[in-house]
Amino acid sequence: MVILPDYYRGIFITPTDPGLGDHIKKYSHSYLEPDIDRVLNFARSRGAKIFGSIGTCWGSYLVVKLSALPDFKAGVSMHPSHPKMMMLFEESEEDAYKQIDCKQLFMSAGNDHETTHLGGLAEKVLGDKITIEEFPDMVHGWTMRADLSDTKNKRDVDRAVHLYLEFFKNNM
Image (cartoon, rainbow, N blue to C red; front, side, top):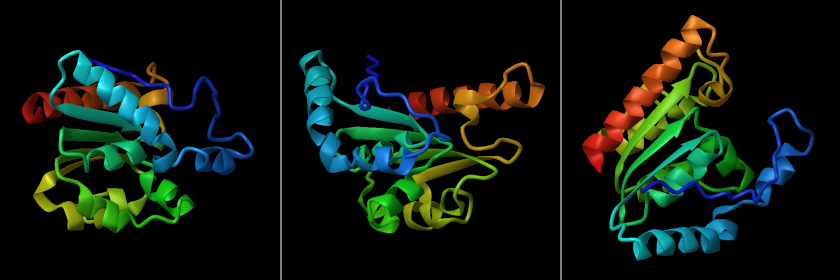
């Protein structure tokens, strides 16, 4: 079963829009908890017993938070932005990692935050719970906004899809 909640409730904002930071600040984990509970209860009512989560950009913030819940078995973050989100919310990235109790896959673009790369804070705290795949030729947002007519972009998007499918297959 795949569920794709609309946490922004239909509001669309791009990374270049003015007021992005203020917009994101509205969607803290505590603000989204009632939505998360509704989604999990819905899934459980349909027979789900274990969960995985996948997020791009700011969605990695929820992946990290959800990965602390006991029913979650795997989390995937593509071009993760949770370090910046946690700074906005004045939360400790290290403490969030310490709460994670399931396998993680981070797929970081060349210009993503250093804590999400090999040798960064995520790897130091999570140890064997994390696999980090780096995409040095890509820039933040590549899995969602890359021009797939460019052979490098297509190569790396295809690789990312393969990696997360295998990751979920092996960890769920």
